[in-house]
Length: 67
Image 1 (cartoon, one colour):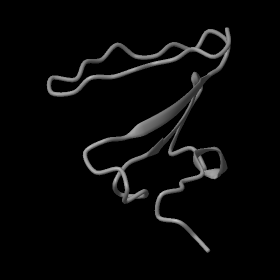
Image 2: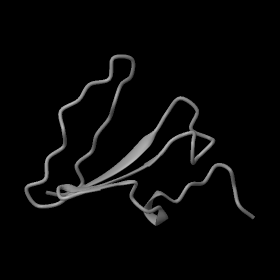
Image 3: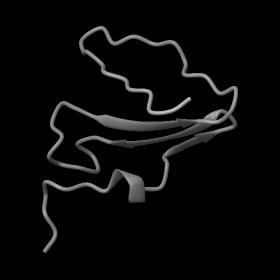
Image 4: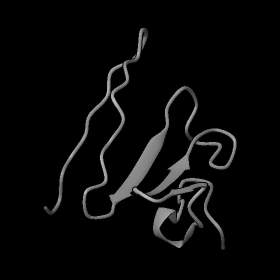
């Protein structure tokens, strides 16, 4: 039985692939339980950087697991 509350982010093909790394995300388009929210998995290659950005109407949490 497939649950509407489960999304396999690690099994999802990255939507953005660049020479610096990959980004895989889920939002209400592909995971309906996320209304007004999103989750991202960012994998950076050696010397890859995360682009500077801001959110005028949202907060963001980021965790570095290795490196």
